[in-house]
Length: 183
Image (cartoon, helix red, strand yellow):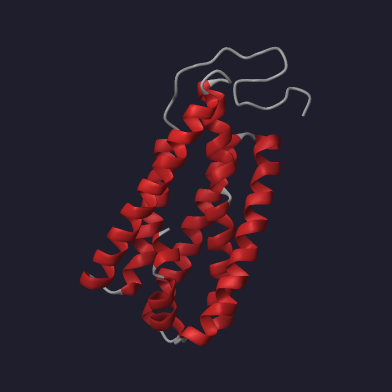
C-alpha cells in the first residue's frame, strides 16, 4: 500500500503526472488489480497459494525495479510507466487470494473465520506501517525511494510467507495446500 498511498507524488516526480491525469491512471490500475485478483484465485486453485504468492511477489518486485530504474531518467514517458503500474497493481492485488488460501490451509475450517479476521487486521496494520514508512521515505529520501523500499518489503514477504506453519492433516477431499484434490 506504500505505492498506492503515495502514487501521486511518485508519478508527478517520475513522469510529470498532474492531478487531472491521475484519475485515468487510478482507473487503469484498479482494473489491473481486479484482473490480478481474479487470476490469482485461478492460480491458487491450480498451483497452490505458495507458488501463486511467489509469482505475485516476483512480478511486484520486477515492477518496482522497473520504476526504480526509471527514476534517474526522469521525466520518463507514460508509455514506459503505465505497463509497470499495471503489473504492480495486478501483482499487489493478486496477493489476498493466496494469503487467504494459505491461512485457511494452515488453520483448518474450525478456526478459519477467526484466522481470516486476524489476517485482515494484519493487512490494515501493514498498510498503515507502509504509509508511515513511505511518508518517511519521501521526506528523507524522495519519492524515487518508494519503489526500492516497497520491492524490498515484498521480497521479505516471500521469505515470511514461506515459513512453515503448523501442519494440518489433510481431509479426504483436500490436500495440505487447501486445494480440492480433483482440481
